[in-house]
Length: 484
Ligand SMILES: NC(=O)C1=CN([C@@H]2O[C@H](COP(=O)(O)OP(=O)(O)OC[C@H]3O[C@@H](n4cnc5c(N)ncnc54)[C@H](OP(=O)(O)O)[C@@H]3O)[C@@H](O)[C@H]2O)C=CC1
Ligand SMILES: O=C1O[C@H](COP(=O)(O)O)[C@@H](O)[C@H](O)[C@H]1O
Image 1 (cartoon, rainbow, N blue to C red):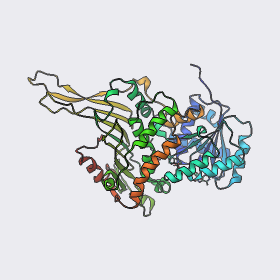
Image 2 (cartoon, rainbow, N blue to C red):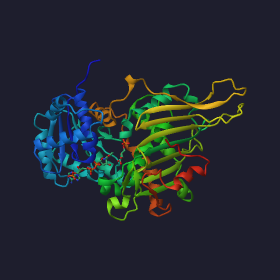
Image 3 (tube, rainbow, N blue to C red):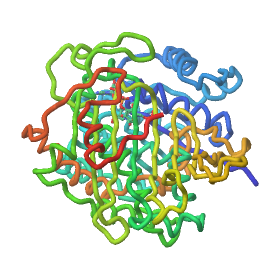
Image 4 (spheres, rainbow, N blue to C red):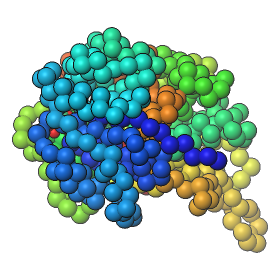
């Protein structure tokens, strides 16, 4: 296969922010290393500090050494190529005239394709677009990447998106949700729609319930100011968790065409049953971590991290239903939280019991466990005869590991995949405006019930699996969270 080298100018706004240093710069380094980007491309790091190109390069080198994968060596040869692409640009979103610096850079030896990555809070998107337009830096071949969450609710999302749409057409806008760039998440489409055995089983007749857990052991620490305005609902549920629910629940799209997939995801979001006020307390749990022990180390509570009062949630657990033919009355239990015992991203498909048992001992219903962090694996739990001469057949639960052969093992990070998709103008793994707004419409109702204190804020000790109410949410249904 001939390798395609893509030639473009990429501008990262918020280039010295947490996301840029931890994810975007390593992803771009890898795209250069794997020769996806032509060496006449440019990567412009735009940030507020006044700094020389050489100081910026030094800083980037230092950050890359910190944030490359633990098992990966920093390669001087690759960095030499990467460095040759990087330029620094001082920009303050609030000062239109600083965009002159960008104009000077972009219009010299320019590449036709321009990508603007807004790695900053969405309240700045309008200002950035306006300044780019004032300096005539947007053309029909330009693309813009918008980080999530866009706005803080449906109303602000609509306003921000409308503003961006004054400058870019919908097909130039790439609304990123990095979970869609994870191989295991994309594999949900392959697993569901390329394996005959799962096709007839994937519905309310055969599945008892579905669980999704996105837990993190890290706290909020240096991101406190930012996070405190959003909380787990806006930071994780409105986007990542909603997208996972969509991929698990959607009908088969007619093809892998971007809009065919987005149309099916949208139908799921529009079928989400709105949580009634009377159920809110039991179906929408919110909590904040207090001081505790994580990985054997004492850690501060959320309020001590920020040194302030706050009613921002760091944990959410929800019980939701999708009101359609396929999922009628099948609960989806989803949860996410900071300062939980470990980093764990996992989907559990709990099948129903067999209709009648001919065995003396209890048969465990089958379970499909899809893990994508810290390790990627797919496990199918099945019942199996215990080998031996027992007169009566005895059964045990065994795990069938569906792990890909080593040569299949992922080496690309989510952001690498998604940045390459933006570069090659493939929007399949990005969110369309109607999806974003449908997700807000559903989460807004819960957020406003919380604002009216309908569900009280709970607490959980750092290093635990969330508040007791999240456990009893399932216990009331005679179910338990799957814990590793
Ligand atoms: N961090 C993460 O893990 C993830 C973040 N995101 C999203 O990515 C976006 C960025 O997040 P994150 O990197 O964590 O945030 P940070 O606060 O670390 O970075 C934001 C950047 O915006 C810059 N900025 C703020 N105001 C201005 C201004 N007036 N002019 C110029 N630059 C300005 C800041 O510059 P300065 O350094 O000068 O303050 C900073 O570099 C957010 O939308 C977030 O939701 C999405 C997924 C994961
Ligand atoms: O979008 C976000 O995701 C990260 C978690 O991402 P993961 O790929 O490491 O699972 C989360 O820490 C951050 O708060 C949030 O903004």
